Amino acid sequence: MVVGGNATTPWSGLEAVDRAIERYRIYQINSPVGIPVRSGVIAETSFVGPGMRHHPALRYIPSRLSVVPVLFQRTLPPDIVLLHCAPARDGLLSMGIEVNILPAAVEACRARGGLVIAMINSRMPYTFGDSQIPIEAVDFAVEIECELDDVRNSPADEASLVIADRIAAMIDDGATLQMGIGAVPDSTLKALAARSGLRVWSEMFSDGLLNLDAANALDEDHVLTASFCFGSRRLYDWVDGNPRLQMLRTEKTNSPALIAANRQMTSVNAALEVDLFAQANASRINARIYSGYGGQTDFIVGALHSPGGQAFIALRSWHPRADCSAVVPLLDEPVTSFQQTAVVTEQGVAELLGYDEKTQARHLIEYAAHPKVRAELWEEAKELGLA
Image (tube, rainbow, N blue to C red; front, side, top):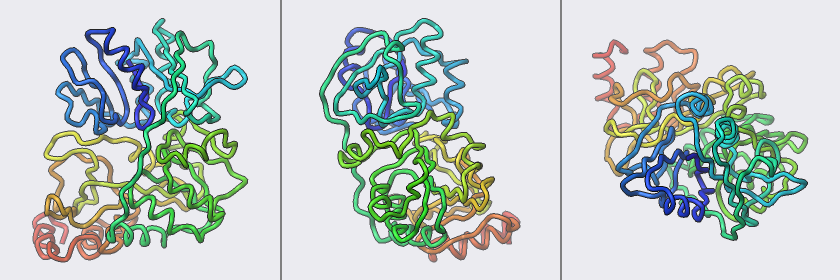
């Protein structure tokens, strides 16, 4: 069974399925807390969210997000797809704020005679594009009335604000933006309020986009493109019926070729750690899966092939909880991505693209790493042949 994730999990429908079926596999991207945890339920995903991170029957299936639809055609054909939709307009339902992998799941499910079930919620914003689905494509529909999950970020700390300002300073008027969720992306968008002609081609967006719209920093003649969003009710009301927004399936939003076709494509992604070879780990902690590839590799490749494009990795130089450096000599974990334009921390900007490996390592040590580990990193760099 494929179910929408993020802020759109149709809880009442999921509970009904869980009561009716003893054993099943649930495939969901970025699961929120609350999915069934019991014997007989296997949790499958290619991007682990908090609802699956500690699931006892987790099956992580490595895949870039743009490739997940291929899995539905080959190794993970769905028997059931459970949608969360806005009421129909002109015979078309809308998947609202979560399109993502769902159109591909619906197509694969219908091709093998499976069931497509829609929970129709008047509180779901109606969006246009690949989010729209004919009523005839749904086998069963249930009307519900419930509020969507309200996802709010914690206030940005000083380090996040510094990182955001450094990134914003490298983004010019007319750039196309891809940013994820969190304090750094939203703070970066706030710092871009004085820009003009900005465009959006992103896997997702959150409340930070409202700041750009209020500041008239967006290109009003260009449609905003994303695959899903989550945030506050204020964001959902802005999204509802907005003709300036198109929600496309993940094969389109995350296609490196389509990403590269955007002018000055600027990708900002997070990581858990980076090493002196400019490799980033954004997926695992102590070999245990924490998230997954997501769209990071899709957008880094696409951005670097875009005219004037840039790809940034943003992270704090020091992990306060783990009390360790985020810049390490050599990753112990599998690599998520590598060779971005630059790595940005509160310490500075380590430029990478176009520099030889020794210069990349020097930039990471001198401009991205925390001062108290720089001497140690220089010693490790010598051992690695990078100094």
